[in-house]
Every structure is written in C-alpha cells, then in structure tokens.
Length: 216
Image (cartoon, rainbow, N blue to C red; front, side):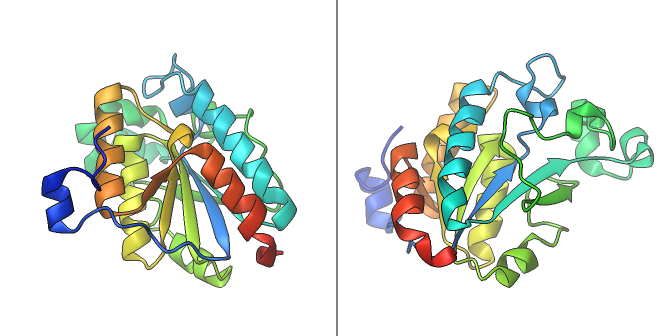
C-alpha cells in the first residue's frame, strides 16, 4: 500500500497527518457476523484471521474497561422482500441478512460479553440512522478503534462518519478484511490519507494496554 505521507501528490495536498489519540477509546466491531465471516454465505468471505485479530484486540481492552460495540445488519421480512431499502436493489445478496437468522448473529469466535453493546443497522455506516454517536458520547469516548468487514464498504463508511461525528479513528490493519485484495488495500490507503490512522495490531494493543487505564 502506498503511504500517503510519502506519496508526493498526497503529501503536497496535506493528507495523511496522524490523528490525536485520546484516553477513553472504544472498539467498534463492524459486521463480523456469520453472514460476513462464513465463506458459504452469499455475502461471506474467509475472515478467520480478521476475527482472531479482533478477538485479541477486544481481550486487550477488557482489563481497562474499554467499551466494545458490535454492529450487525438485519432486515425485517418486509425490508428483505420489498423495495423499501434501495441498497438491496444494488446488493441483493444482502437480502439474506434477515432478523433472527444465524446470518446476522455475531461470529461466536468473538469474545462477546454481556456488558458489550449491539447496534443493528440497515446501511453501510454504523452511525447512519443509529444511536451510535450518542452512545459513544454518553460513554465519554474520545477515540474509536474500528474493526470488521468489509474494508471497502461498512468499515470505510463507519470511519468516514466517525471522524465527521468528532471521533478520531484508528483502524488496526489486521482487524479489517474484504472479499478482494484490491478494494481492501485501496480503502486502507484512503482511510489513512483522509479519515484515520491505519495502524498495526501491535500498535493498537500497546495503545489499549498502556493508555486506556483512565477508562476504568
């Protein structure tokens, strides 16, 4: 992936500066549900490595009480079978993400805790049409670590809306995935240039372990 900080066009434009890292982070896990992590699902891919890395990140934040928010896409029968949701015309495979089905359940390899939060959404961004911004504000969160799927879809949309909602964004590279390498890398580049810091998992783990103690 080209680094926006050393690409002359992006550097001249002033993109790629590091974000401010706060002291009250939250982890937002975007759509790591069976419908996305099961390769046999219409919308799925093999995201086992992403699930494992995200689980490690979550566990690193537990001792400091870092809030964890999971998201899922789930449609009612009327939404899934009708024309009310424009996205489903463009991406009809998403109609399989029906309320109550195993496809919309969080992958059971992730360490879900009763204290975690769950946001159900209808579109790409975890912020659009949901209470996520209000939830994070209520928790006094000042930095958001975004994990999940897909990098080119819901992760990118969530990163854009997170920074537009006033939250600095970190995206641990190993904690996000896509169905193809090209869109994955292109969107990591764009997130790094304009919306957040794409970091290594080790960096994110150190940040949670060392700097999140005040979140207790």
